[in-house]
Amino acid sequence: MNDAMMRTPPASAAALARLQRTNGTGFSMLEVVIALAVAAVLTAYAIPSYRAYCARGHRIDAVMALHRAAQHIAADASPLRTAPRLPPGLDRVPERGRAVYRLEVSANGEASGGYALKAIPEADGPMRGDACGVFVLDALGFRSNLGAAMGGASVERCWAGRAI
Image 1: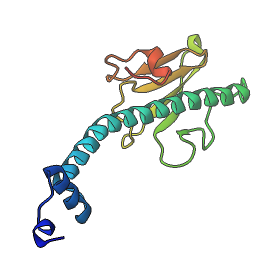
Image 2: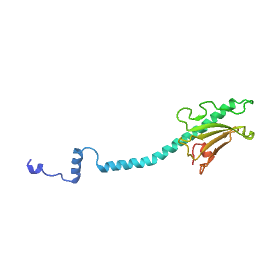
Image 3: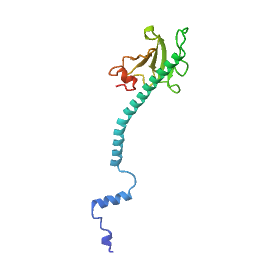
């Protein structure tokens, strides 16, 4: 082979790009920007979905805790007792870890069975501004929600775990 043939550049720009790619290391700036844009779009959709998923789980935990507390009160009911009380562990949601809801028993009229259980979002918890507000279950099983944040959320959807 002669020196002129050895110094001849590749025939096409694609071949040149291929040679540069195999000799280079890392990613080009365009590839990094595209990867970051894809990650940003995925994050923009994933974070609100994850928060809604967590909120639904907290609501369902509160509903289950209210029913557990109602079963405890019904099993422990005695006619001489004036105000039912919840034992430690049944007075918060979840039973262990950081509390998200606080459970309270309040006296209610005899028309509603004599007491009402409330699941109140903790002031510094993740459900503090939730659309469902405070969950209320009375002794007769009537379900309701209290709070000014109920805009758009129905009681049925809240008790099913879905706010809106």
